Image 1 (cartoon, rainbow, N blue to C red):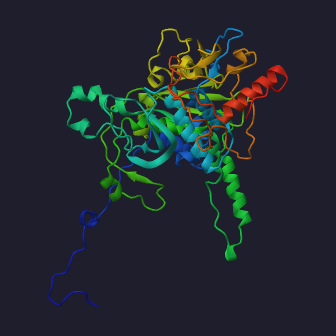
Image 2 (image 1 turned 45 degrees about the horizontal axis):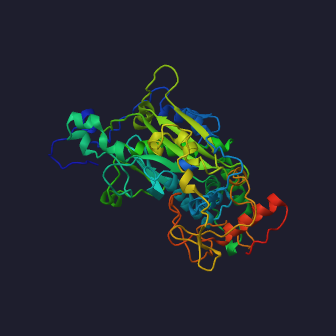
Image 3 (image 1 turned 135 degrees about the vertical axis):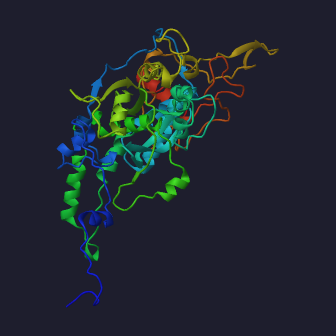
Length: 506
């Protein structure tokens, strides 16, 4: 049957060039990764889940990225060198600081306790280092950049401190160097890079017990028909959660992700609210969105993470993780298909973790400053690093009453300017026994699980009050108020020291 009209010229079949011209082919450029690059590493471990969010990182991620943890000696000095027989009592500042430290040590994974620990670490750091660590961001969420893709808000940090700057700026947005500076700014301005250096994160806080609780409840299980539990799937999910637990708790791979995200935050521009609303991730993309950005001008940056022991009331320690994220390591994530070192191992991340003893609180500022360094702790107040700078604010001297002759020919104590303390009828004990303890030799008498003098605990004190930040020179114009905890503590100390009850009224 003819396919054309009679008399019409026959149509020749299309040539090969015409067929290729008419076809709409979406050309995709395939880039072969260099040996040793991140793409090459994922290709070699194709059967393992490596391209996942940081909370799902395992020890394999740390090993493949070249993260090396090195433990440094415990920082135990300075400690107060006290004269035997001297007596000083803790100030309100020392009592509050000790209470917050006990809040950090207490092992509890409840959300309420996690919030209390976040508040406690912010109070401790702002009290010890008010010039550099007084402004913390609670519940920070950092992006993670991989090539031309960004994972938004996948690195969650309970508390985050940025490098202090001369100009007061908001910390709600991610501090970065704007992308316009890469193209429009002159070369001298690009080389300076002052903006991101003065606003980038320098210190993060994580709670190990809270991190373990998140991993345990990471994989949810949908209940079956009639709301029946699915025990088989629940068992498999428990095994998946167990695989996320690091072999060494001090070498947690999530710390590697935090240090990397903190370093990247100083060089990438945070997406605007309009761009974020227009670029919502698709289902199954895990928050990943391709973006176009000019290559940042990287430089070596020092970032730190602080955590602490939990459940160890006798000898608890802070642990300070320090890493200098190099330009080569940052470029590995900017160009995941390239190998910066064609021959030999690729650049990794060297991380040191330094334990710092909690007690005594006299000298805690100097011990933490040794582990944090000047960038986070600031310049020392004295040239001698062993000198305890907070000696005066943490201790209150005993103010003896002033006696004047009265016209009735008997002595009467009169407090003219300073506050009059409650008289003592017992011998004073040595100061070393007081300051080397944690100021909490006795557990609270109530059944409340809150620590003594915690921010949520009720306190009872007399009408007199004292500023927690007072020094030794001024004890207070309105008189020193003894609260119930102080009286209990002194009573217990005298009972233990003298072996008898001295009759303190509680």
